[in-house]
Structure formats: structure tokens, C-alpha cells
Image (cartoon, rainbow, N blue to C red; front, side):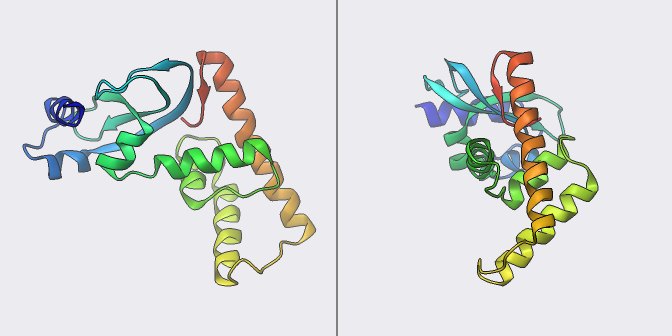
Length: 166
């Protein structure tokens, strides 16, 4: 029943006439952790990890739980949540490419920081995790992580929720 409700709500706000086409119209605008449980567009309650999706054609926005985003839209919200939580707990840990791209998209990091981070991620991946960062690179990565973590905290106080992006 909740799956049908979500599909119907999205279809009502989409230009496309089929689900396969409609879900491609939507992208993540923001992800956040609610201080108080909220309700997903599918009707499920309680939801703490939420995503604001925007339709690229109609401009409409909806708030959907992270699980529904992953299950029905196949967008990387869970990877973004995971990375931001990881560096929030330990700023020496790494973001993933999805989180870096999202932080850049919403203006939390600049083009240089985005390129730097994606470069170190690709080098590490190419070395199967064995590549070590220099001291200078480690400082830069930690600085970017702190910047992202600060943005999360700042937006949390401003909006009454723990904002993870956007």
C-alpha cells in the first residue's frame, strides 16, 4: 500500500506518464537527519533520515525517507548519509565520491577542493587502498572534512534539524 502511495504521489508531480520515466526526473536537493521523527511521502512513520527531492522538469519538491529513495529512485542518498556521518564522527576518515559531488553541488566546497578530494580518492582506489597521503594532503583532506562537518552543524541549528547537505 505505501509503495503504491509513493508511486502515485511522485507520478502526480511528474511530467512523465510512466514510472520508469518519472523517477528519472527526480534528483536529490538535500539530505538531512530530523531531530523529531517525520513521515515519508509513502506514509511510513517514523523516519529520521530524509531526502528532499526536486523534479528537474516540473520544479516540484517532495520529502522522502532515505530507504524509499534507495529502493525506488536508485539515488545515492544512503552513500551520502554514510560518508557525512563517518567524517562527522572522525574528521580523518574519508568522504566518498557521491558525498564530495553533493557537497560541491550545494556549495559547501569549492572547485579546487572537489578536484583535490576526487583525485585522492581515485589514487587510493587505484592502489587498492594501499596508497598513503602525504602529510600536506592529509591536512587538506581533514580541513575539507571539517568544513563539511561545520556546514552540517550550522544548518542544523538554522533549520531545527541536522542537515546533511544542501
